[in-house]
Length: 275
Image 1 (spheres, helix red, strand yellow):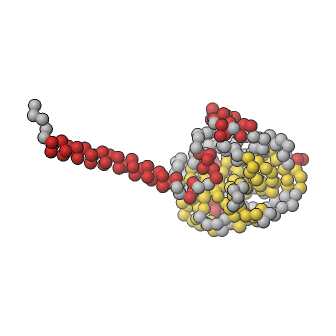
Image 2: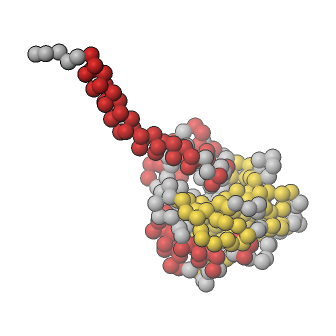
């Protein structure tokens, strides 16, 4: 059999090289796109760390086992100041502090991260607690509510996650009960992303302050993140007045995400203040 010439071998190698480049181009493009996606500001939040290892709300990766999944989640099992809690009226003490919402009209971005629908914004929104400024990083939802009030649960709960310049975390929890929801909240719900990892931009600019109750009376206590790694040192503010959400919206969220509420944790020797 006649051996192929050197020039023929070079030609074949060149053609094969072009084939490999063509085949790998979509893979390279996908990797680059994924990297760029992860660099989007919506991901630059304090809970990036929570998505490193898989966990869930049920089964062997559920809340009862979070502390056993990795040593980084041990606080979920051994921590003494965990959230959420059941806020009992007879355990309250009274304290005077100031809470001021300084939210602006903003473009909103939603993402389904597999555990909840998380929403970020582009403009500077913040709250001032006792004249200390905390910037809003993101807000998200739980169904049913994670906190209980005198043993009562609510259909849903919204968490507005803030952070000050020193890195201290402040989470404002808002209970959600069945009723006629605000048009802004209705629009947010219209664009809930059903696919995990899917990001959508809400085609409107909304002011979150319009969704929240005017009454800023609240409970406050020291707790933790309610998802792994359950880091403690989180300042919690739970508004006493709930907002409204339709039963249809609750069902839509549950169909997309499922139940995503961590069970209440022991209060221990902590104090709950009514402000």
